[in-house]
Structures are given as C-alpha cells and as structure tokens.
Image (tube, rainbow, N blue to C red; front, side, top):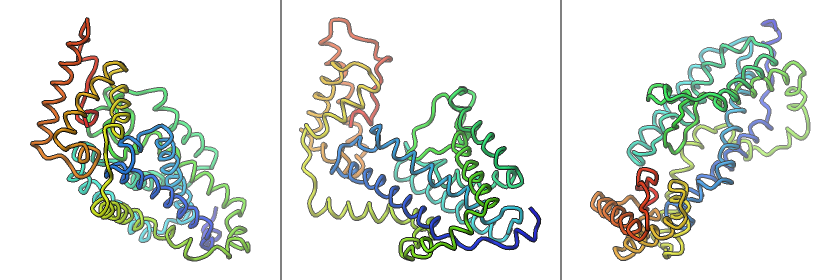
Length: 340
C-alpha cells in the first residue's frame, strides 16, 4: 500500500463501536455475577462455573479481536505516532491502576496481567506485523493459540515470565490474559481488518443506511470503552453493596453447601470426604455467624481467618478419623477459599 492510499482514511464505522458496546454489556453481566456472588445473592462459585468461564473467555476474545481490528484501521501503513503513544499510555496507566487496586483489594488473586495489560503489550507487538500479509498474520496467530495447548514448562512458572502464558502451573488471578494464546486473537483481528481494508468492506459498511442508522447512544460506550471498563465495576459493586446494606441476603447452610462441595471435590476428588468436610466447616462458621461474611460480605478479619484455619484443620482431622484408612492429606489440599 502506498502512502497516498493510506491518507484516504476510512471514516469511523459505527458498527464497530456498537460491537464494542455489546462486548462491554456482556462484560458487565459477567462482572455482575461476581458481585452477586461476593455479597451472597448468588452461589459463591457462580463465576467459576464452566458456562460462565466460557462466557468470560468469549468476552475477552471479542475485546482483543476488536483491538487488533482497530490497530489496522488506525495505523495500517501510516502509523500516527502521537495518537498511538497517547492511547498506549492511557491503556498502560489504566492497567497499572487495576493492578494496584486489586493488589490491595484481593492480594491473593490480584490482576498482574489482565486484559488491559495484554492489549497494551499486543498493541506494541502488533506494530511489527503491520506490513505482514493477512495470511501470515493468521498463521502466526494460530501458532500463538496452539502453542500453549502443546507446550508448557515449569521454567515459565517464574514471576517475570508468567505474562507469557506457558507456565505449567498458571497463577491464581481474577483476570489472567497472557500473551499465549491471546496475542493470537489480536492477530486474527488484524488479519480480518487487513482483508476488510483490501476489499473495502469498512468503507462500504460506513456508507450503508444500517451503519448510519445506529443510534449514537449505543455507539457511545464503545467509543469510550476504556473509561467504561474502569468505572463500570465500582459502580456495580457499589449498587450491590447498597442493596446488601438495605436488604442483606439470607444465607443458609444449603446455600453454601453445594459451592463448598464443588470446590472441595475439584481439589480432593473424594465426594464422601467433601460432604462431611463441608458439613463440619460450614456448621462451625454458622455457629460463629460467619456464613454471611464467608459468602462474600466483606473480607474476613485476621482473627476470623485464624478461626477458619483452626476449624479447617479440626474438620479434616475429624473426617479422616472416621475413615478406616485415613488418606494422605498431601493428596487432598484444602485451601482457605474452599474452606469458605
């Protein structure tokens, strides 16, 4: 492509902005499930259930794909450096803010490389691919997607390498979006946009009545997706907190027993043990009035965590003593999360 053809930039396509808005709505729905679980209005493990995990990955994939599309539409063959660095700085600062906030709010599962971190890194790496043909982008993108399915190593478990996504023991994080495989999705978005530019899809779409008829209020969030991403969760969390203050959810043993047993079973693999263990630990927490808090209303205090740890040890010992051959506890780890 020559610079003259690039100078004739594609007008803004409302459909792409609306696509981002739809992704934002889906993201808000998923994060709202977290909020409901945190405050006890939904099962504690609702966001970790298989269907919700697939939903979350589709949402992340859509944002990353659209970020790849945007890089091509904005800078293909003629990088507008001031605009690029300004946008990259905004994303990087937002990612840093997310890391700092979640480190203090959720120190055990804070976000050290989430979707904003990935988009910032992918935007930089994507510059190297701007002059590649779309078929090459797809091939390299497929390699990024496939490699972590075929190769992982403990050598990548080290902290400075976790952002690559090739660790054989991925870390716990509320939002972990590593380079492998997600940069592959970014490249797919770049390839799609390159094909669209070459075949004039976007110019034709921007000239259609459909694109022009899309309401501005629906495209607006997509045009300001970064700020919406940053503010939507505090707003949702605040609303659920207010609801919990006015009308706190009634938490019973039955409400938390199933999530406890699912979490325990995923670690221990012993349904009988988990049924007895959860009955023991949840009963102790109910007697101390901790069921509501353990279901999510605020964090447990250090003293309450110590109590939970003591009860966890006691319950494991009691359940083991009922078994004819007590199993090796190293084969049945129960952490604080499952105890809650």
